[in-house]
Image 1 (tube, one colour):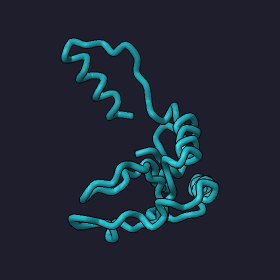
Image 2: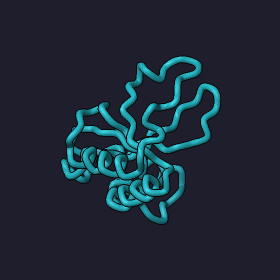
Image 3: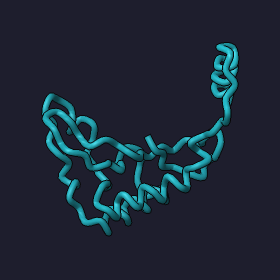
Image 4: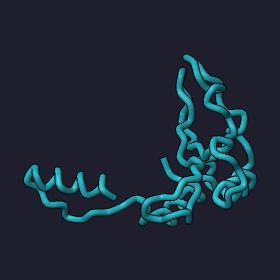
Length: 126
């Protein structure tokens, strides 16, 4: 919380007053629902690639990129319910794969209490 106060103080020091202060964590439920919509539309998938598997100049596409939507939905729910360890699964957004690029991570698992939501969530948007 001290970081948010510090940012607010710096903005005011610069002579600006924020119209509204928001926190992403206030919208975690809505963001989660939108992530499920992306999965249902075939625009996101649960991936189990490890960071060392996608390092280098031209990393291979995820072998889970074309997994069935229903499977990704269930696995995303499993991520939310704490059935995976940190780093064991991520939600990735499908993009046009270009040389040297990978699909960006949209959600990752982190077992740490959030300063606003406590331990209500273990998946966090990136």
